[in-house]
Length: 175
Image (cartoon, rainbow, N blue to C red; front, side):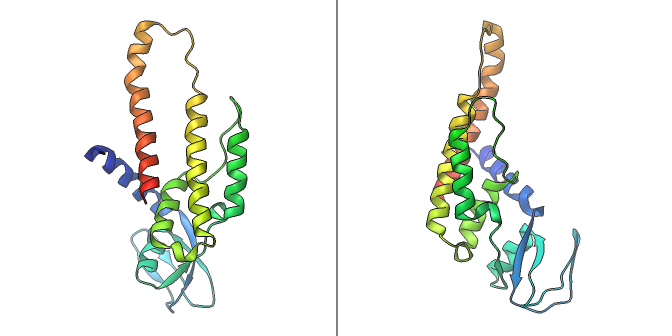
């Protein structure tokens, strides 16, 4: 079972991705919408526009837009990312995906799955990519020649990090 503090951290991550920009196809007409964080628009059904992720999700919940699937979330690009992740060796850089790709993808799968082509394949590829990424990340950690005191000092940090990885993985798989 996930602790309250772990759940709040996941909610925090979902909140922080809210300012990421995403493209929508509005189903309504409006010159502009003014919010504390900025002014967005114009909104019309013949023109796509970029809005913050939080606004896109809110409009989608109200059935006021279609969300245009980001390139990184398209099945063919996820396959490429997955293949790259599997071929990665120690020292190779991480695959370049948006900083909040997991948080955004899980919310898009939850609230906008009807806008995602090949949604079942996309969901599977995201799970595979996440698993490969976590596996690669943990296998790249090398802790050679540590003293007992050094191990004692870093053990809680590593344990907490691995617990967070597992919690995020479980959260993604349960949605």
